[in-house]
Length: 214
Image 1 (cartoon, one colour):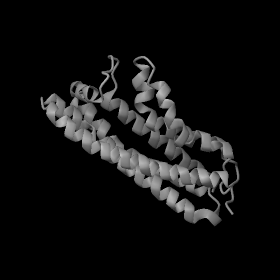
Image 2 (cartoon, one colour):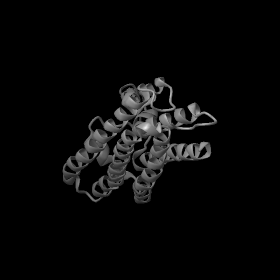
Image 3 (cartoon, rainbow, N blue to C red):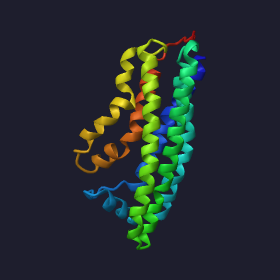
Image 4 (tube, one colour):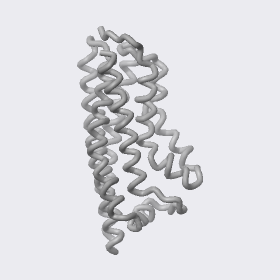
């Protein structure tokens, strides 16, 4: 069980770092960042097509590793509460599947911008807004269920780990948004994935050598 737990935990770390890499391929730059989101997306028209394609394809692939990482969290829930844990796993898994689709759509911004059709960007923004909102909603449900299980001592996690969940750490991006370039994009630009790197890493650190769910 310990080997299985560690392997699935490392898969979660790998998935989050892979998705982060995809983010950087899609829009990393050392240039000043436009104030408006639309202008930032339009600037993706200068990103080479090869980078856009590679960055987009990474999304669905990373989502598979993410789901394995969520299974790692599921395994650390006591058997008596596995029904609740199933809902947690389902919410987080569907969230990252939608998130993978959200990520994979971003090359379209660069391609359309590079072809001189900026007027289409607004329609794309509306679409990914729905995708992002749905993913964020499901993520919130999943991590809320996880936190409840932890606080009720129904997992092998210490209670303080709730402070390392994306429910809390996602809001640190309000601070990272104040960073200058290139740290702004390196940290704030990929923070939605780095929060998962953090929680999976903390989970592995807190993992005992022997774990027997009851």
